[in-house]
Amino acid sequence: MSDAAPPAWNRDPEPFIELISADAIATRVAELGKLITAQYAASGEDLVVLGVLKGSVLFMADLVRHIALPLTLDFIGVASYGDASASSGVVQITQDLTRPIADKHVLVVEDIVDTGHTLHYLMDNLRTRKPASIKLCSLLHKPERSERHVDIDYLGFTIPNKFVVGYGLDVSQRYRNLPFIGYVAGA
Image (cartoon, rainbow, N blue to C red; front, side, top):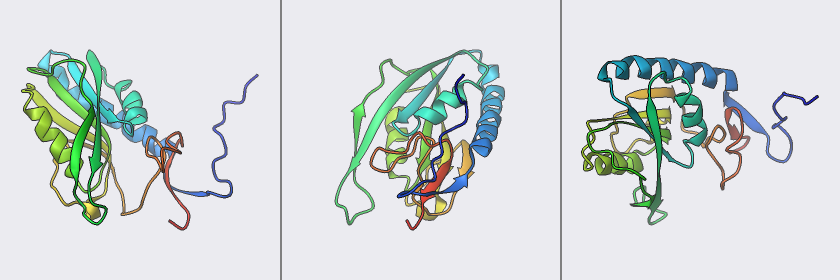
């Protein structure tokens, strides 16, 4: 018989301080799925749910299970490069869509809107592909860090200006699998 309890994450040398619990995340994701279902149901057309790699994967997987509509999934990879002293940089698409989105209803799913530079670029780029509609669903928003305005149509949580990890968010590609969102003590 296996133990279904999640692993104990708060252990030395990297104790995490929980900011948003796994239960709070699950509740909010279900609410977002219900809202998205209600708002897209009238279109009668399939929805393209587009995850921004890699951070959105866990959020997107849970979210789509709460959207009671026909939908397809796709992913796009983006990376920002630039001078470390500058808040903005060049945004590069590292993995493009596998299918065209022209005349489709598109829901972009992102883990966090921080400065807004990457999402502003990405949303502008996707609009040039002529979708029927395009909306953004972000799990988190850090308004204190905003430098570019980005319309967030569906938002999970507004958080303080802390470097967060878990539920898809990482530190050096680690800790994406934490069931909650937290930050490293002392960080």
